[in-house]
Amino acid sequence: MGRSTRNWAMIIVLALAAPLGTAACGGDGDEKPQFVSGDGAAAGASTTPTPPAEPLDLAVTPANGAKKQPVSVEIGTSVKGGKVSNVSLTLAGGGAVKGAMRPDGSSWVPAAPLKYAKTYNAQVTATSSAGQTETTSISFTTMAKPKSVIGSGLYLFDDKTYGVAMPVVVEFSPGIAKKDRAKVQQRMFVESNPPQPGAWHWVSNGTQAYYRAPEYWQPGTTLDVRIGLEGIPLSNGRYGNVDRKATAKIGNRFEMKVDNKTKKMTVLEDGKAIRTIPVSLGKKSTPSSSGTMVVMEKKESTVFDTRDDPDPANRYVTDIDFAQRLTWGGEYIHAAPWSVGDQGRRNVSHGCVNMSTANARWLFEKTKTGDPVTISGTERKLVSGNGWTAWNLPWKEYVKGSALPVPADLGA
Image (cartoon, rainbow, N blue to C red; front, side):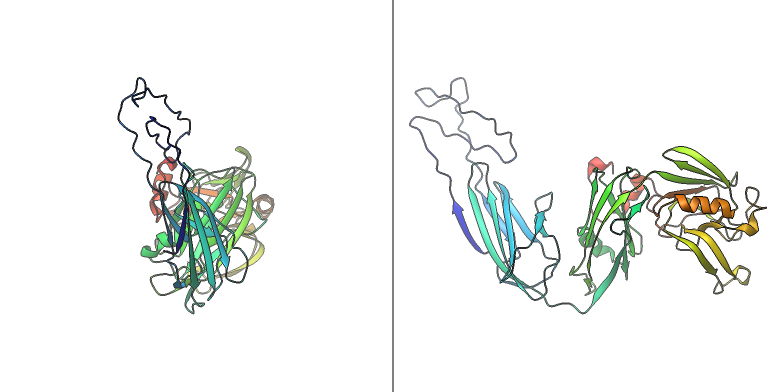
């Protein structure tokens, strides 16, 4: 522990007055002193004396003089008898570091990774409800830049507008081991405005994690995301490679619902059906996936090249217009002028949602990345992680994929 100073509030004791207790931390502060009789007993009250306030005690990490700290280090705080009232962190010989306390008060988080192989000075002050203060100062040094890192990616970009089902998607290469996921998840921050608290869900192999709220985002929501991974030490000897940030918007509610029984897509905008489109889905040997997906990317023109497919019958090279990806496995919504005669009648595709060029163009011009697409009634169920499958589970099942406890008020 580093240097500490204490400033004790002056206590004035009146003659014959019984000692008054200090309001507990978090109280309403409206307690009033009792008038006492000449024998020191409060009129109409018990003569049991009020217990003294809990002494103020502050502990801070890292330890003073600590070496080789990760650049993701946080200023840990533990307080008895009060709460943290101020934290400052400065680079030795440099300027102040911005940051904020975690909501639970457990630590102060720098707003950006610290610099490698540098010395920092921190000062933490705690204050009791009676005005007593305690300040602790520490100094520590960060580690050199590690050589072994883990790759990561964030599928969210500044100033872009997404659909109401857009999850915050983080990707890791290689995947994060189960024993490290809680540590990593603690460094993945999402703020929504208006507030819509959500939860993280890890895909089983740890290569992706999704964040969403219990319901689709409200249109007009702003998402502020920081994936603060740089310098996080992992159990395999690697470290997080970089911090990533993005501020994005959620647009209008636009949904697509495909029914294999009718071979039709119903398009809804703000809850109202605006068009019904005949479609052809995947034939029985290559069925489309049933489940809730989102538009992952859009390409006005592309080439489908499946010459590496193990089944010769599924190998082809075809120019495609107005393609919208739904899965990593290669399922798209796209124009298929060759199957117009089958659309609305039978399934002939290799798993994609086929429609006419006119309908595909119209839809392409309406959709956004993150718009939800629900397909029902096919021979195959959507596999978790095959695309951004955050919405393919009921909420109570989804939250089981979190590496940290989910607050009870989120209905876990």
